[in-house]
Length: 189
Image (cartoon, rainbow, N blue to C red; front, side, top):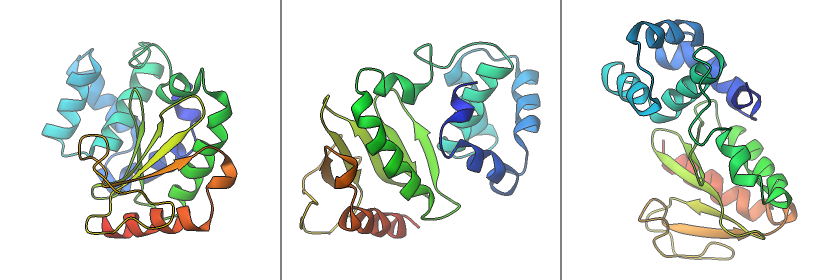
């Protein structure tokens, strides 16, 4: 049940009926009836047949596998916990970024992956990645924006983000960083 305790997950659970038409428990019934066992198969069902966005589908599958099926999520543990297991000093930066992102709007979706966490609205607007033991890279999607201040240009992560901001301390998550994240959020709407 570790994934359910991640910041922002309860907000996503609360938003499920409005965003998907069903509660978490109702989605659990859909997955149980499907008798699917693999995470990818469950994701394909929810996204393909039910039109659920990637972030919500991933959250439903992770919690279902942890709580109902008893199967741990991919990698054996919570994806975010794995990312920061050897980089604990970076977790406060992640927590501060995530808290700020969730304040941008009720439509923010948090989609943990093996090596990063994607932040989405209608499309991805940011990506949080613990790149080294001393640095988090915040990928920002702002097409047409010239690099400025902390915002570095260049295609990052195979075109998933247009810019990067390097963060080594929670203090680095300042007004400038929050403003870039807000602009990316607004552009993704």
